[in-house]
Image: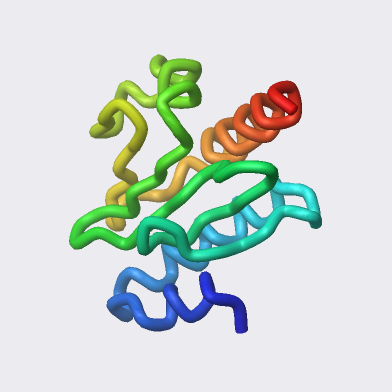
Length: 115
């Protein structure tokens, strides 16, 4: 079992389905060489640097794709509560799968171009 799977299994039972869904969406979007770890006490995907984090909060999943991704997807995120580097996806709403995948791909491209 990965450390991210352990994190999800330790979360509240009602949070686990959305956390598993978020985990699978990101895992399917990143290349196989991407590392999974816990960083800042949250599930993190790492490829040359931290790509994205996500975490279980009381009423939402926090998704942390960095400030650059938040700026790039500002219009698509208008219906969600956001901050400089994070977006909140409420548990009682469907996850925006296509948006999450696009943000992860944005971060991958950004990281690969920086190196």
